[in-house]
Length: 52
Length: 257
Length: 218
Image (tube, chains in turn yellow, green, orange):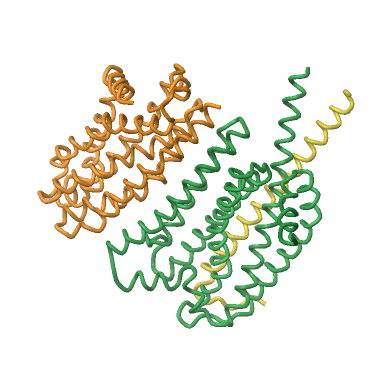
């Protein structure tokens, strides 16, 4: 399945790995922060509603 | 009539609540379609395209390098437009979108620089050359850092929005200026074939040189990157809106207590 | 406005530290360069124009955080904002005062430091010309940066991060003039570009600085 990358295999693979890691990190960090913010905001809104 | 109605329809999303509701509805579409495009484009590019006769298999890096580079520049452009909308029409969502986009731009710039360096090593024999294009991207990276740092430093949200918007505006002018200055600077130093060759394999010039075999997967990858950008910015803008509401509510609660 | 300029100049001289510090920094930087790259005079003379330009730029940067901070702390900036003089001209005067107390002295000592670095004879004239044309732009851009960060407690480092990228075009063309002059090459094009940047920056950037300052004073 793996295509023959010849003598540049390391180059191509490292470029792909580096880019995909960076993209994944960006997406995961965004999602993590988004989730956390949503939870925090909901908690706060509930608390305020209870206090009236 | 229809035009003005449409224009009004766009401004309706300046309302944070409406924006959140609408973005929640379209976000799944963007996530899924960008994921699909990226998987298809990158798989096609990585497994099913031939090697370039001159560059060997390194040509496969193009599927990451070119889309990232395109987005690195256009993210700044989007931030500029969003900042202008904030300065002129005072829509909070707009400036928050600019803030949300900046880290995406940073990552895109880093990807473009890193893949470029990895690609440059076997092709030009060096990780880094002070070629105009490379240098401009490095400067762009610095501009992103300054923009983000300014956002982080200022506590008052409206003042931060104003100041970063002006910085984005001024920065855009200087970024363009730097691009020309850098062009001049390097040509002044070493003219000749090496720059031409570097110009031909980096960035947009390639499009003319890339044959169809490489072009279609590249196009799909570009579309995938753009969709991913839209998804990320919409999602992160939602996060920023919530974060600001959170802080405002917290401040009000403290003031009340 | 002239009164304001005179006041700023007087304060700069009286405060003592700010005035001499930039020059001392420039001197020390130039002295350190041969220690770091080695004493070969051919090498030194080829990097001299660039080193001197960079040194002048950093010395300029060093004094930026005092540009507006003192007036901000004692509240005289609020007074100036409500004064009948438009804030744009206040900012311009501030930049001019900064240039007179920092930029101009740097230009004057640069040839002396050039001797230390074996600057070729042909280079002295062009070094002074390029610095004379370029340092006003550095002051004006720096004023913009200072106005952006004036309200912040630890604005110094952020100020550098914001201002340095903005200095890139000026540095490129200024150092290019000095380098070409030292090598005995044609200098007209970069000189015109440098002058153009300085003129444009002086004409336009005070509006941005004033706008930013208004936000910070709000």
